[in-house]
Image (cartoon, rainbow, N blue to C red):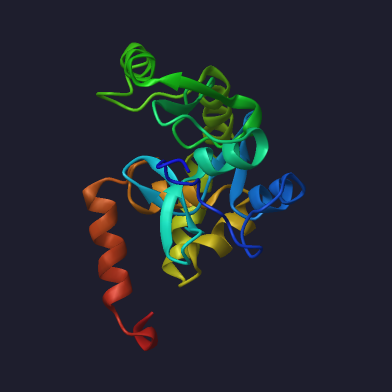
Length: 196
């Protein structure tokens, strides 16, 4: 009998067969360029999913490793499942590849991911198109809808953008708002409804 640990076994509620992969990914990702970006749990910068192990315990495991296990078989312990596109959020099976740790680190360093986030060319292009599509007036509309109390998901659906795009606007990472404008909005929101 081998003394190596058996790979995690996923219960039927999650992912057990290749037939469940499309539904599993559709419920947990969003398309961005030609990538599928994971929208659920992250530990550090790595997409994670809850899996139930053979002994019945549950743990978070790397999503790409779990997908590789279902689609292609066990991942050797000395290998990483990385993406060809370079996005750490991508879980598109066609973008996955096995690499050793040295190659993984060299690739991440060459792409600048060890020090600052980078995107693949297709993701960068999609981000620019999305930014151009929304524009300053769209960002103002997003802020107005958020100020009315709508959830980020509802605003994203209304505006036709991703929740991440709405979150970036809400946290002032995209289309930054000057401090003067922010203080005016905060002042307006502080007044009771009857004084507006």
